[in-house]
Length: 362
Image (cartoon, rainbow, N blue to C red; front, side, top):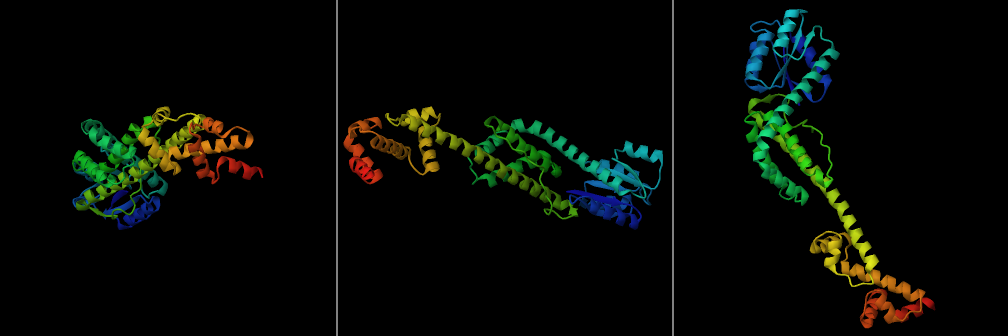
């Protein structure tokens, strides 16, 4: 949310600008108003703002002096000038003071909206740049925290993610050294770093910038700034971690399906042989124990049970379509012990092989 301080000695103009800003975007609000530069600075001593829109000529302190003071004392802020004076010198001095725009009164709403667009874009650029510089300097010394995130995401270990988010927020807060408005872009960069680390695992995820409407009051006291931006960052990290986990779960599910299909295909082709679980695990490039667990989770049957079902199906087909002896059929589907084969067949179909054939042929 972009919080705006309006400074003009005319209450009518302050009210008019307030109405226009309210019509601009939900994410931009009038946080405060002041009649001159002195009152504006007094307000800023106790409240937070991102953008100052100020008149030039005012009693006690003019707009250009105010912008100079804001640049020195509140360097995160940006300024826009609204003036009745089409004076090149004023415009030139405004530019020298890094004001983003110089709008003539009466204020055209389209020009105001354009200035607000520019201010919002510049504020985001400033913060993203500062956050990126911090990340470049600090991250190499805190790689273990990235590794913790990667472990949680890769293992879908969601139970302790809330604590990890709080610990990560404390880490990032130490980096910003009181510039709490950098917590949000830092959180976004942190999440993008995790996504980049996972890119080799075909991990693709687009994160938006997030929305913090409703998290803080329109007028934010300086005492509440830290709490507000911490809350914004926590929301960002929570939303991002949720998307990371869900995306990884989708990848894992796809991988699981592929592994299960590969196991089934192997058994379908080799049901007549002695199937060794370790050889099967090597075939699908997976730990044997994990393969067996995954197969049971996904199919609700063990690999052994699935193998028996395939063998019994094939045995029934041979039984019904040929005149092969029972021991021959048993050998063809992987059993040397014909008695054991007959027991399995009866357990599976409710009848011995010969009784099943008689019943089906009668």
